[in-house]
Amino acid sequence: MKENKYYFKCTTCGAKYEQDEVTYLCPVCEKENTPDIPPKGVLKTLYHYGKIKNLAKWHKLFDKLKAKDYRELLPIHSERSLSWLKVGKTPLYEISSDSVPILNERSKKVFQILLKDDSQNPTFSFKDRASDLVCAFAKENDIDTIVAASTGNAGSSLAGICASQKQKAIIFAPASAPKAKLTQILMYGAQLIPVDGTYDDAFDLSIEATKKFGWYNRNTAYNPFTIEGKKIVSFEIFQQMRQKTPDRVFVPVGDGCIISGVFKGFEDLLKLGLIKEVPIIVAVQSEKSDNIVRNLKNDKFVIKPSTTIADSIAVDIPRNYWMTKKFMEEYNGESVIVSDEEIISASKVLSENTGIFSEPAAATAFAGMLKYAEKELIDENSKNVILLTGSGLKDLNSVQEIIEIPKPIKKLDEL
Image (tube, rainbow, N blue to C red; front, side, top):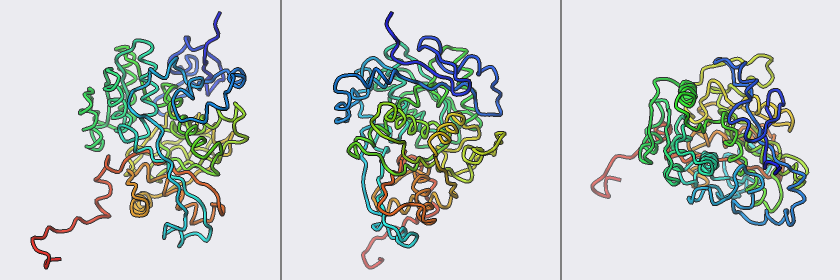
């Protein structure tokens, strides 16, 4: 009997399942879930690392930046199942901290900043990494309808990737989501279902629809393959840094799925013996949506309604809280809280000094780095990756308060 390529392990109880036994959550732990706490039973996808290490020329596979290099660490049979669009392989720009005036004011140390610009994905956000893998899995299993809940980015991402794969996307999104993101969803031909409520309301409705209509669900953490798609960013960072790891990676956090993906990617490299330790991963949240960082040391999870301007990370019930907490504890992750004012200011600093215009959620990671620098928590000559997860063009309203469009002129003497 042929051994399955991967298997699942429950984050809560540790139970293991073969790939054909479960689809979403651990069936035992799922029964304990209630609407007011992060779901238990989220599954972690694991591989037979010992056998992969013994594959001929394994180490040489990471000399390239193609999806096929990761095929042994993905839950699909062929890289040809992925979208023909260019997902991933995004640039890693390196600048010195002394080239950013505000950092010279805040810190006496000089260090390297590496900007991982995932706004250059097809739908202009990091979420394409998860959508690409979920859609590839669906393609290999003859699934043609995929549903997701989203504040905008995951929805527009799924819509775009589904369009490229000739699949049908159904998106539940808060009616209050930025117009640019809702526009993307509709332009890609997806079915948009606006929800009179929050992201959490949209999430719950999409799960109900999944069970009622049998659609395949892409939701963050609920579908374990979202993390597998997102982990590829860590492989890319490792390759782009010439088989080395950074000292820190600053990650914007909402649901906890992106940061878990970053951890998971480095953990896979650790299990394969390609790195000696996982770098320090820093979870950055807005003080107006800090339901992961604020609860990390609490015995009981306490919800605080999210009101942050960074809509992509505005989450009341972080669906991947328990896995994030485990990763943070096991690999000594760090965290920092920033204000919405610091987020918008960071977006302006980033734009003016690098030419990269990021949406508030992405600028949150940069704001976290600025706060670390101000507290002298970044070492001299260290290498610090900032994960920029989405384009600023996705949410123009959020920065209107810090810019002023000049009045039109007819003559030069009016200047």
